[in-house]
Length: 289
Image (cartoon, rainbow, N blue to C red; front, side, top):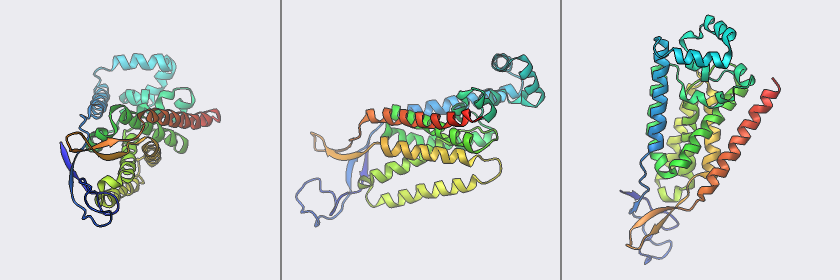
């Protein structure tokens, strides 16, 4: 597909090269953008919805036994019985994977990631999955499958680590990772502002507005704003150092296309470094008890 991309550079972008710099009138140029089916976005969405269905089934008493058996393996019969008596019987998957600080300190480190697959209500998952679809399907087309998946994982990890450090309560939800997508979108627009031209300022303003509104809503009771902030920080860091940087180039047919000049291998390095950094901070907190 082709999208009209605004001109860039002093004096505008001249595909013919006949105008002198500073004298050309800015004009729209049809440029081929990456066309990538957002399979990672759809896969994450499907897995998250499936997990929520399992949450609901266990609340209704259906498919409960396998998770009871798994809970008994993890906690032991006596501890599990005490947890069930304290009201965890209707939330077995949350018990197994939610961000519960005491259990993370006890060595259940998977809880720094798995909360992104769990949700507290239909409204909760509805908002998060709509945001994932709306933002992820476009961002993945520019980031590519592997880099987008790394961004999502690093965002979930960063959000849950900051929540672990700053809050004591139970926390679940994909909003940690969703905020990383929003932040990376802002990075992407800013670093490729030459491509977006005059639209870049309005697009960045829209991203900032979304962040401010959602962080403001995060002060409402029951919302883990530190998880949001951690995802935002993770997304900003990953997007800045590992995000795509496009330039407009002609191909042999004379048509113009976006070419990513970033190093794909750098994304792996940035993702690993950020993951080690977040986990290192979490383990320092764990050692303190």
